[in-house]
Image (cartoon, rainbow, N blue to C red; front, side, top):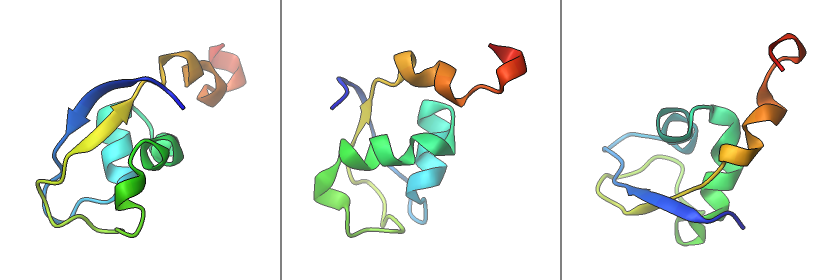
Length: 70
């Protein structure tokens, strides 16, 4: 599991992919975000003010870049 680098309190109505995009730079990091927050796996749409851990994905960034951007 990745190191936790920050926390985030979602707003009412936010979803995992929205939070991953906003806080981690891509909705493709949703699984890493969910893995860092097993307590909330059953939630699809947040009520608001839950405390989520934001994992470090800085080393994984290259794998989501288009080939011409590497």
